[in-house]
Amino acid sequence: MHIDHSNRSRLDSPVLRRFARNLRVLFPRRQPPVEHSRRLKQQMHDFASGGAALFWQRQGIYAGAGFLCGFYFSWPLAALTYLLIQVGEVFDGIVCHKVTHRTNHSLRHSHKLLKFLFASNALSAVSIAAFTLMLARLEGPGEHFTSLFFLFAAGLFAAVNNHQLKQVLALRLITYGALFIFIPVSDILSEEAAFTSPLWLHFATSLFVLYFVLECSTIFLRMYQRTLDQMDELRSERDKARESYEIKSQFVSVVSHELRTPLTSITGSLTLLRETNLSKDPEKTERMLDIAHKNSKRLSKLINDLLDIQKMEARKMVYHFAPVDLSELLNDAAQSITPYADQYEIVVRTNPPPFPLTVRADHERMMQVLDNLLSNAVKFSHEGGYVELSARLVDGCALLEVRDYGVGIPETERNQIFGKFTQVDNSDCRNFEGSGLGLSIARQIIEDHGASIDFESTLGEGTRFYAVFPLCDTEDNISIELPQL
Image 1 (tube, rainbow, N blue to C red):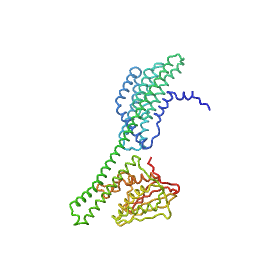
Image 2 (cartoon, one colour):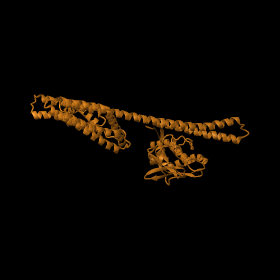
Image 3 (tube, helix red, strand yellow):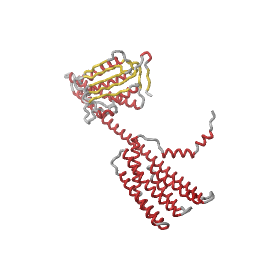
Image 4 (cartoon, rainbow, N blue to C red):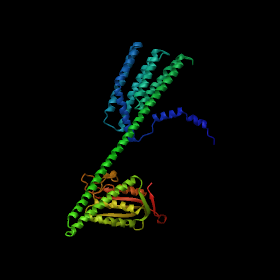
């Protein structure tokens, strides 16, 4: 197969590339609805506020053009067209005021206001076009310096000041451009001018000037859109910085609380042990040691959670994947959480599957997940209640479930429940201890296993967390150690 590279080189010419770039400016890629609504609102506001700022400048231009037309050609024509233009100015001023002082910010209302802006600018463009056309008729064939210069000024003014809304800019440029071509062409046709006639030179000059106006319009439009893109980037960076600041504030608040409380208990216990005769009060000594030991474990868990979060964010978490029997995993997790549950007088019930269920997982990391889920279930349960830990086969997958019958999770917290440093109890007093990292760590570990986690909750009745794992064939799996990619 032969490829004609000569045609390809012609299609890849600088002129065509520039034309394609201008088309991308005039017809940008479609944006999401929310982004489109926000940007359209910004463009309309910039257009309306800019138009209001240039009101007296336009009035001076109209008055000067009207005076020249009346003094050298016809006062009735000058007065008529000036009044027609003023009608358009009044209409445009009313619409611009509605845009800049709007209270309804919906996309539908933006489109409605855009139609009014389009109508007001259409009236203004037609008025200016009618003025220049009648002026050209009074000048006579070949004598269109004043009318074409007025038209050129109107087009350049639109390119410089109406680039915020490409619909309005296109309307004005099409109107002025059509007239820019019509006036010299009508002279050529009426005079039946030969190619050597100056009228053809006027026509060629008009095309050149029209190209210049269009190029200026594209440049200003591209510059404005680039400014909007930069503003969007700055807004995005601002939102990210604000989010980072909020996470940092939550981190400082949580860590300071979670460090201060156990450290105070440990310090107090050690101080009492130091000042007490251990041989005279062994029960008190044992109680102080138990408090210090419990709070040391609490500190250790907080530090481990922070280290795990850091590893996950750096993508350096290491897993040892191997076949894991869910029945054994449930028993190990129940035994591990029982001492903690006994402190709250909570019973942990296990419901193992009726037949072996094996998943490919890291046993220690899965124990960490279940410990986080079960400790939350115990912590938010009512004293004397129970939590359930179960596994079963659902649609060819293994479903691991932790259910409690405690306080439940408000629906408003659904989007934040797996976030960092978040708790259902997010008050300043923090009635429930914990760093707020457990569920975030659990979700990341489960997703790294190729599984998914979600929850269902009814406020005041309890919560059910469940994870869905793909099954594995025990004969085809060996224990491996893989760093997270």
